[in-house]
Length: 149
Image (cartoon, rainbow, N blue to C red; front, side, top):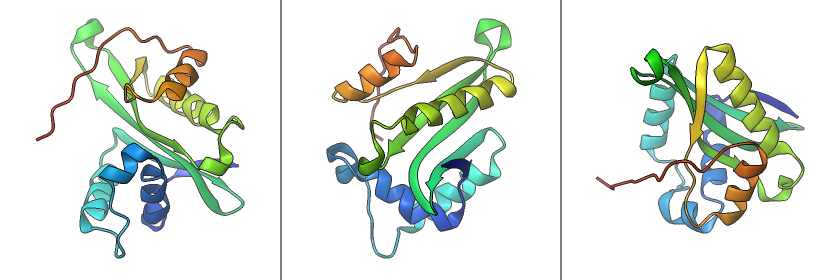
């Protein structure tokens, strides 16, 4: 299994992963054709040096993904933060360490780029994800809020 930068050719596989649970199924649109908004978003991510969209590939198939965002900020003495978003592992590949490998990749990449803090949010209903992040050393130290616009 390799972790590599995502390409436009991976978009359908990534969106399929994002849609493969009750929460994602209500938010994503698998088309066909794949909505133009996914291509626009991919192009914006790809053009931004503070964004890393990667896939995990096994035997030529995309089986996982995540997005790492590097955010400069004034707090913590001007620290750079790494934020992990949209972590997904194909249902047939779960509980085999792939998610941990993706998170390790993101942590290593963020550290290499000078981040002093890693952060993420996960839906309050994702109890298995909470246990997963706890095992990886993340602390549920904050309460996150969202507002749909």
